[in-house]
Length: 116
Figure 1 (tube, rainbow, N blue to C red):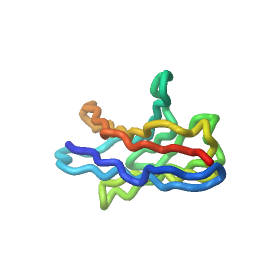
Figure 2 (figure 1 turned 30 degrees about the vertical axis):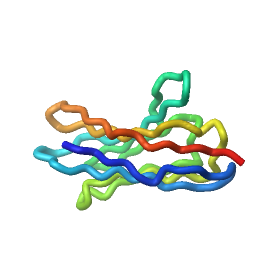
Figure 3 (figure 1 turned 135 degrees about the vertical axis):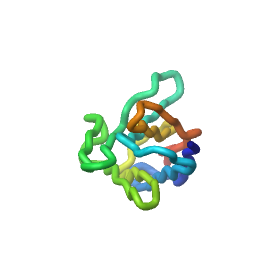
Figure 4 (figure 1 turned 45 degrees about the vertical axis):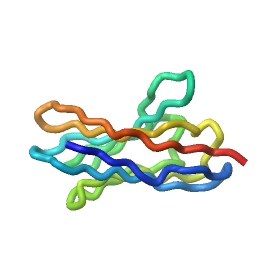
């Protein structure tokens, strides 16, 4: 299984970005997908998650109302729409996919920098 993130970059405070994470090589069904981020000197933290079947979502308090996670199961892709970005959102963003058999896969990460 290979996960490829895209959509990161440099954006001004208040701006928006949309991250994508496309999966390939899937041989079993997906249970759960999530986005995590890691800022320099900090631990990796959960940003948002979504279940594959029902689409139930969960968000970190710091991004509620600004970020939206969604998925397109036909394309094996999960998205993170990020609005009203703040400098403290600057981090490397990683997607994670948990398979029904319990296997966990991570993407390579995409840099998001929020700065004027």
